[in-house]
Structure formats: C-alpha cells, structure tokens
Length: 303
Ligand SMILES: [Ca+2]
Ligand SMILES: [Ca+2]
Image (cartoon, rainbow, N blue to C red; front, side):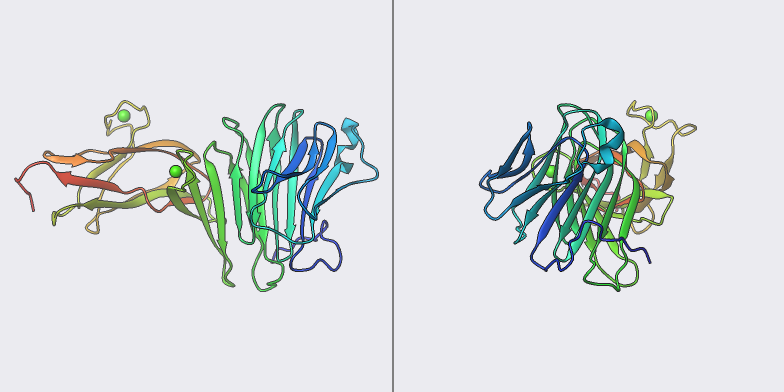
C-alpha cells in the first residue's frame, strides 16, 4: 500500500482545517464565492477571506538553484466548499500543489506553467477539478488520499496528459481498489458532458459504448471506425473499424493516448443526431457515454 508522508500536514491537524501548499515562484491565490482573495499576487500578500492566513518559508529564495525552498502556504481554520485556487504563471517553471483538507490529501505535481498562464483548481475529499490554461500540453501526476481511512489505498495517476477541457477526477473510496471517474466539460458550459472510468493500473485504454435508437430495429452490425486521416470516410485497409455486436455495443481497445475521431457509417434511411466524436483518449481512460443516437427517416423499417 502506498502512503504519503503528510509532509505538509501540521501535527494535530483537525477535520475542519484546510492547508494549501505551493512550491516555487508563480503567484498562488485562493478565491471564495464573494471574490475575496487570499494568497500571493504581484509581490503582495492578501488575506481578504475571513480567517485565512498566508505563510511563507523563512528560507525562501528567489535564486533558481534553490527554488525547492520556495514553498508558500494558505491556511484556513475552517475548510469551505466555495474556494477556488488559482496559479498565475510569472515565469517558466514546473510546480507542485498540495492540498490538505482535514480528511483528505490531494496533490498535483509536475505542472508546467509559463508567464501569463492561469491554472484553476477546486479540491475536496475524493474530488479534484482541473482547469488548465488552454492549449498547453504536458504530462502531470495526480495523487489523492483519504488519510482518515487507512484501509483505502492512495490513488496515484502518473503521466496524465493535460487537455484544454475542464477535467474532474472523482474517487469512490472502496477497500478493494478505488473506483476512479474522469469527467470532461468539452464545451466550457460548466456541465461535465463526457464521462469515463479510469484504470490507473492499466497500460491499455479504450473507446466503447452503445448505439441507441428510436425504434425496435436491431442495431447490431453497424460499422464504426476511427477516422485517422480525418476525411470523413473509412479506408478499411488503413483505419481501425469494428461492427456493433448483438447488444449494440462497440469497442476499440488497446489505444494509445491521443486524439481520435470516432465515426459511424449510417445505413440507408437512417439519420444520426451525432455521427462522430472528436475525443482525446487519456491514459487508462474508458469512455462511458460515447453513444450514437439514430432515427429512421422513412417508414421502410428493416426490423
Ligand atoms: Ca459541457
Ligand atoms: Ca478516413
């Protein structure tokens, strides 16, 4: 069982307390729903959120070689659900963010940031929402633990690829291997519309789910393909394709991390409300709701 050392957790830390620790130089600000802020910004310290305190290491150094000493902390005697954490890049660096709530520990490590970029996080027990600055691309590590429950394992997800979608990790803490959900808000409207499970132990990952329909017609034997060259047609010699089984289920397995366009070839007289998906497949990600929904366009049913 993996355990962390609670390096940033003060002795006697109570259930209600909350501590954010940030390594290195970029600005680091917590905001509440009233837009009060506490933290470090443009060389100033703010403590606008009631009860909050900012702390900085005594041996802090702005010298590049000694940056590991540059941790900064924001402390709340009472954790709150409305807190959002923001990192504002003011130089090129790779930072680590540690969040110790009274009953959980979340960490995100190896996050690259550059001057002018902004990353936003929301954290609670068993949940992390990540809204990275758009159009960056790198791999990061996320660690989530419920240290009040020694019987559950720490969740460690290495080599996750950043995406410009808002990402939400949710853990269902169960003794025999935690269940990890990974949701995406693909159109920035605040609603997580793409859902997946995540297998942190797996080296292969999948796109799969079902065809749905508006009649009693059988939806087995429909051809789905990955449009690798993005030309809207299937080149059977060059592109992966599968047909739906008798449960109307399809699956592409053993995929590598990357972008895929998933398309269906409609049968005659069928209309698809959604004919393709552009998806980024992350490490260990298994999609749960890439459904294709079809309706007949005339009365000549094949059922
Ligand atoms: Ca959405
Ligand atoms: Ca093609």
